Amino acid sequence: MILKKKKAFLSLVEVSLDDAEAISVMTQRKKYDHINIVSYNFLDHDNNFKLKKKQSARIVLGDDIDKLLAAFSDTCRKHIRRTFKIDNLYFKMMDSNFDKTYLAYCNFELANGRTPFSKSTLNKMLIFNAYYNNEIISSILCYDTKPSLKAHTIFSKRLEIDNKDEYKIIGYASKRLIYEICKYGILNNYTHFDLGSVNFDDESKRGINNFKLSFNPLVVEEYHYIYTSKRFILLNYINKIVKKILAIIGR
Image (cartoon, rainbow, N blue to C red; front, side):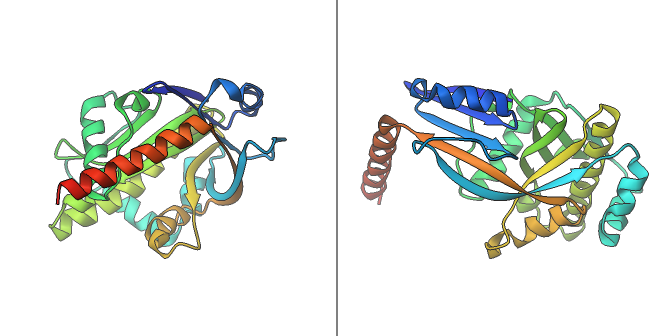
């Protein structure tokens, strides 16, 4: 999958799990200001690209959802089964509720002190949502990199919730959502569901790591190739300086 974007007069491109497209982009790097390539394979590249290795959690789907469920951890299976008894909880695969999904995503990112990606980026993703009382409580946004589904963003409403019972429901629903996506993947001839990176060196990632590992995924190496032009580096530096000045003025 390839995603091209324009930011001001900068040209950005992201290639995910498509080695043929990745190699093509690499050979045309002068056309772009920023390139981000993700692959399960080592690709020949020149010194203009920085290589980062990460670990990614991939669920092997197979062809039987019951066998797949049996491979999940005991606690994970128990939480998923509880969701079938929760009233007003439902799930939408390939959801078309674009605006509400983007709003829920923005709320989550801002609550974590991060800048959300643009609405146009969401247009390139498959949306899978969990609803409780007709409100989105958990979402997974995926790239369609068939034969794999690749999770780009996993988020929920948990940071907005004070009620302990509803907080638990969100946790259970998030696991059920993974299960439902796996079922969707099997029915639509996908072979893997990639939950994204796991970082065992960062203590702050323990919660999301444990969540992903509860589905008994394969942990595989993932290669990230990153190129940035001199113009991109310069403008990024200027942007940081401007933000610092505005922060000082705003004190």
